[in-house]
Amino acid sequence: MKKTGFILWGLILLKFILQYVLIDPVYELHRDEYLHLDQGKHLAWGYSSVPPVTSWISYLIMLLGNGEFWVKFFPAMFGALTIWVVWKTIEELKGNWFALTLGSISVLFSALLRINTLYQPNSLDILAWTLIYFVLVKYISFKKIKWLYIAAIVFGIGFLNKYNIAFLILGLLPAILITEHRRLFLNKHFYGAAILAFILILPNLIWQYQNNFPVIHHLKELAATQLVNVNRIDFLKEQLLFFFSSTFVIVAAMVAFAIFPSFRKFRLVGWSFLFTMLLFAWFRAKAYYAIGLYPILLVFGAVYLEQLLNKKWGRYIRPIVLTIPILLFLPMLKIAFPNHTPNEIRQNAQMYQDFGLLKWEDGKDHLLPQDFADMLGWKELAHKVDSAFELLSDPDHTLIYCDNYGQAGAINYYSKVKNIGAVSLNADYINWFRLDREIRHVIRVKEMDDNGKELIVSQPYFESVSRFDEITNEFARERGTTIYLLIKSKVNVSEILQREIDERKKHQ
Image 1 (cartoon, rainbow, N blue to C red):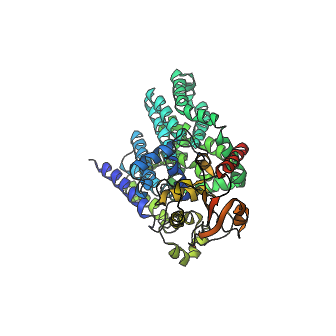
Image 2: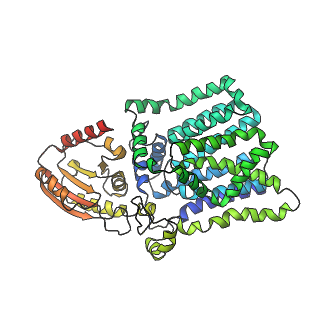
Image 3: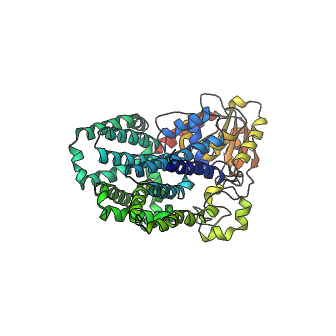
């Protein structure tokens, strides 16, 4: 194996190690991860907020035993593959060991280290963006039509993973148009590749049509509740955070597109970055949506810096340049990852507060960063729901009814009761109610104790309504989530719930 091969596999091994050790064992899975795992039990060509690929991976995780190791393995693997694709793209541009190492280190010590800790579509999304740019570089270099069809396949898979990749194409098309590669629009294989991509995503589009395009409802809801609060200037400022330790490499890439003759034919990559960034800013997108744009810039920046440091004096500067992304990123390892226990974070609260990490969506400071708090209390909830379930003598006619998808998914994941089937009117769980049976008892999981309001409303419909328990973990975002026991219904619960589900879907 070449020396560069040892460097590559060493970095990939380090990537996997870091993705596991940067999560303290005290933390559980994140609320979003439970939803994605449950999608694997209800395979379909689409879901209310995401396309189907994540559910396929969840199904594979289930076949592998559904353990937390495998839940964390796949995002780590997609992150490692992103490093590998960056490496291969640098090789395609004739970069040697310095460019290869700098580009890979810049990807490793970046926001991807945080993103790849969570089982969400984002990790594969970033890999798909990087792959499309790699394929584009191959096509520009060799003009072989197979790369157009490979790009179509990568886009199809990327689209079926996360709709975000459509922005890549929207930014790439005008970039092609204003460069010498505009002749692509006269190539019949360009349209053949477009047709192939359309065929690949068609099952999801049909599913969207058959379900009244829930993605549009999701986008409207997102725009009304979250994106409306996104400031375009803040969006651009936040871009500096994702690869802040290797900003100089990104700047080098943009300079290289402008003045480096060898990159003239690849300028559409730079234009694509600018057009896509403008689109994201115009639509007030969340800052992290644009992360997939950066790995390819690190490729060109690393190759260009290698050329600049190719002089005799450059050999003395290269080791310093390679250490900059690592040294600048090291402080983030202390605060940006759930690698400290809640008590340790509380003892060092000022450090987290100074970086604004303790501020939640409600605008208030809390004991933990919100994402960390979203990784606690779930086992406690599942254990207490199991205890409530054991009190009932009629499990086949018992419904676990939750307020949000995190509660339902966590109960389904950690419960010792086989196929407990917790549901909610939130997210995709609204489609997973089993109402073809008589429901006699309900274990009601409420987001917080509402001072008995739930008891008062439910009292006429059940022989017995009582407050059973609640989540007591002081660090959990779900602290105070309450469990009620509603025993022996006097009405047809299935019929009432069906009406509520129909009404909810009507407004969607």
